[in-house]
Image (cartoon, rainbow, N blue to C red; front, side, top):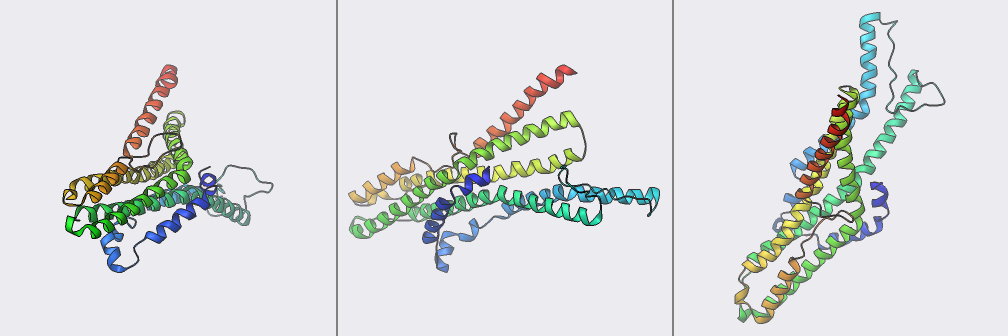
Length: 317
């Protein structure tokens, strides 16, 4: 569903990409001023992403590892000739042929592994694009904040001030338009991420109560931090986008605007008014995606699980 929601808006996403490419700093000195490296996949974010792929690798390879373990245990107990390979598949679905032979097992496991890889790519591709767009917006906003805080207008430099504030206002409006386009492209996807995160947390808790400790529980335990971490990344940059967009108005107020000409002051007032509408990542039809929404999803998921546990499982006992 997430992939289809993103695929349906792929043309709009490409348009956002073109605009960001046009305003991206080209020269080396310009990139230093924009602090490009500070917004290029921080290490903590890469750690979360690597953990995600590591956990997924554990899940998709666990049937093969279990089959090998069954064979090794069989060799120890029954000997090499009597031991049997487990031939455990990734998906518990029947085939029209017997997969319990070396060639058939390699074939079926390869097909299922390819399918799992395709599902993973579809699951994360839209999120990665969303994070890239959010990081780019934060980078440009932080640059605008920095240059505005250090700018000192003078009445005698009216023409220079007018050119500066006009360019600043134009760049700020471009970023606001990009933020609106990002919500148009990713609104449905953000809603699906929110729902799937809450559902996964609740299902993991219910599975623990109903099934107990087992291989499936270990896979859930490995997958749950991935889902939560994936949602946290989006909420983190959603919060940072809100803070950066609001700080533009604070920078406009805190710099020496009172030394400028009347037209400069009016332009600053327009920027301050515009900044009151902060940029947000919005789940389609719901509130903005931020650290506050992350805490809400975690707490509400736990409350739902606690109520269900009390209403169903505690009464049985």
